Every structure is written in C-alpha cells, then in structure tokens.
Length: 360
Image: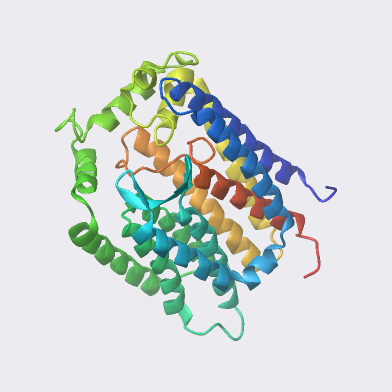
C-alpha cells in the first residue's frame, strides 16, 4: 500500500466513480424493463473490483512472458464462440450461463495488447523476434477477422485506435503506414461486400441520411438526439427521462446510456462524466510516461487507446456523428465481460505503476 501514488488512487477512484454513475443511470433507464439490471450490474462491479485488485497484484512481466499462450487461449475461445456461441443482437459473440453472459472478444483485447507490447518492445532489441512486421500484422489481423465474422463490426473497429497508438509510439515508417492503410481499406471493402449483413449496411447508410427513414434505420439516432437535446443545462432529473422510460430510446441501459445521462442530468451531468474520463485517461498517460521499460509503456498505451476509443466512439455515436454500431461506454454501460475488461485494464495499469521502482 505504501507504493500507491496519488496517480494510482485517482485512476482507481475515477473508475469506481464512473461505475457508480453508471449504476445510477442504469437504475433509471431500466426502471420500466422486466429484468433486474441493477442487481446484475452491481454484481459485475463487485467482481470487477476483485479483478482490478488481482490484476494489480500480478507482475505484468509474468503476463508478458506468457503472452503468446494467453493470446492463443483468447483466440481459441474467440474462434469457438464465433461459430458455436449464443446469438444476440444479430451477432454470434456471446456465451451465457443462466441469465449472465459475456464476450470472449473483451478478453482477447487484453491478450492482443500483451503480445503486441512484448513483440514491439523486442523489435527494438539488437536481435529482433522472428517474423518481423508480418507476424505482428497477423497478431492484429486474426482477432479482428474473427470478431468481424461474428459479425461484430463495432468490436472489430475498436482495435484500430489501439493499433494506431502502438504504431505511433514505436515509430512506423511512412511506407509501412501506407501499406497498412491500403490493406485496411481493401479489408473493409471485402467485408462490406461479402460479410456485412444487410441490417448493418443500412445502419451505416442511415448515418449519412438519418431523415430518409425516420421510423426505421434512422429511428435510433433521432431518438438519441432528442434525448440529448432535451436535457438542456441541468436535465429532467432521475427517472424523469421520457425517451428512456417511455421506451422511445432503444437499449437505454447499454449502448445509449450516455443519452439517458444527458437527458436526466443535462450538460452538468455530461460535464462531470467527461471530467472523470479525462481524469482517468490523464492518470493512465502519467503511468505510461513513468513506465520503467518499453514493454510496460506499450502495454499501458494499448489499453488506454482501447478505452479512449470506446469513449470517443460511443459519445459521438449517441449524438449522430458516427454510425451506430453497438459500442458500449466504459464503466457506465450495462455488461459483465466489458466491465471486467475495463477493470482488468485498470488493474494492470495500477500494477505497472506499483512496480516502477522494483528491480527486474
């Protein structure tokens, strides 16, 4: 406990504060729903705190040492659920037991960042690892393709900010960046033609013209905008959000929890939540800058980029700036595996901060 700096306390404190705000908003958003989402989310938060503590106590160097096996296990689980998992929301990406379920893709995000951090750090050594950039590209591409085949295009898209951040930190040549960009464009085009279901194509097209089908493909974004705008400065108050309580707003406790927050607590509530996210991300950056080795730095950068990507995409999606793809909001949206992913990432960063002065 003596090793805890203020940065670690602030990181953990902001995560718990965001989770508490999310629980309050979920309580209001799910008041008219039959399932008891508040009790379930409370359980996930409690488990998340345990996961955060365990992740902080585990030496990240041990995880990096076994990163290849962690990655193989994660990809195997992802492949299994892609073909044999439970279908929900149009994607076969879930495993469920009783009333609870989760997505192996969340575990695969951490596994991929661990392996990438190890390989990219080793690539700076006098004797780089075998395979060079092609193996590193395959490490990235395999989980992205499996997630896209579920199909969960939103989950696959969230790998982009993490990979871009890692590439920026390690220093990628202009030629390699252009080759990667060309490959990404070709992959997106192929997925659009051969893999993307018609309803997901309609979502993207409705983003360009939301008024073309206001009661169909453009319904979600229109109702979300109404909820956000109607909150004004101070909001309507707890439980007074008409868009969520009257069920105009779809999935208010998951993808559109930010819209419920804006409607019930207005600009003031949104400002508070965004300040907590900035506090969280800012302390994560401080931990990365204080890392004692390149692998630790890259590990924190990858995890932070994942979380920042979720925050930016979800908030932009809710106000209609980006297509609706089912991206949750970290710590606030209802969901078990995603909450555990956020808490595990937080714990890993705290653990790295605790060991900044420990001899390797």
